Image (tube, rainbow, N blue to C red; front, side):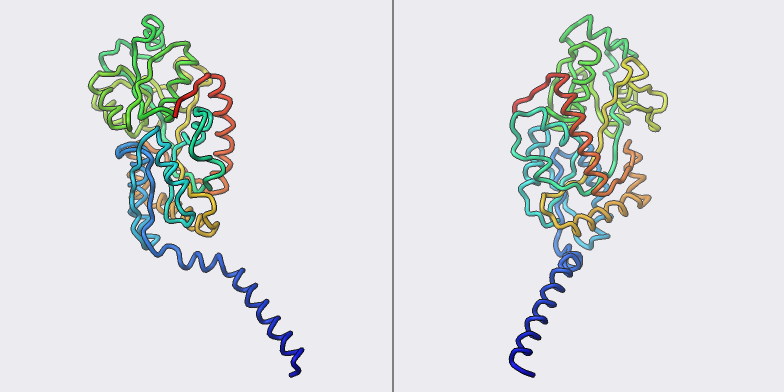
Length: 330
């Protein structure tokens, strides 16, 4: 073989090898991942909806991925501290965030956030939604939404409501309620769901909008009174409890969903792998039954569908927060 032909053959071989390497990158990612523990960042203390979901998913996810799935609770600043930690983590699939729809609300509440939810994250999946319940302490003389509104109007500023923190979906739901009803029930933010519900049970605050997961057991035990749910339809867990829309405020609807997000730049094949294992984990009766028993509606969406949901919610909350006129300091 002549020298020129030899050089051409070597060049063609090198080009083919390079092309093969490029084509095989996603496969290599999929084959290697994961080779060490995966961290679920929960941006709230233990006991809330994000935490319950993470702990329900972790055992089966660990089994399917062949690596431990570690729960890392990083509460504070209404979920923004943990979210920021996740945003600044390496985009390699080993750190993912359990995020409620507050991530589509907070950009319109705060003048500055240390992260950009649209630029710093990539959606992985929707895992579940959960109805929120408007509840009161049994000492409150209100047995319906209309009676609560009348009570709040008769004593402006004297009723308090507790939430897991500023900017949480529970907080925003009550602000939407205040605005729609023309009342002002005073917001008392706590550092997580646990202490917020504890003070409601103790009567230190009179009312709250909380998740079905955190309130259902207390309502059934007679320690709290459920007046309505925030969803457009009644909850199967409490079919006798009306929606706020049908009880007093037509058109009222505040959803609460839980998603899994990864840092922007996480390889697509890894995102798809995690999303697929989340879907499989949610389909396992043990996981699904555990979540359903705690008031969750299991409702998986893949990465592309989750991206569309976030896009719609971001637009919705931009308008809604502007209508309410609510701004928070970080």
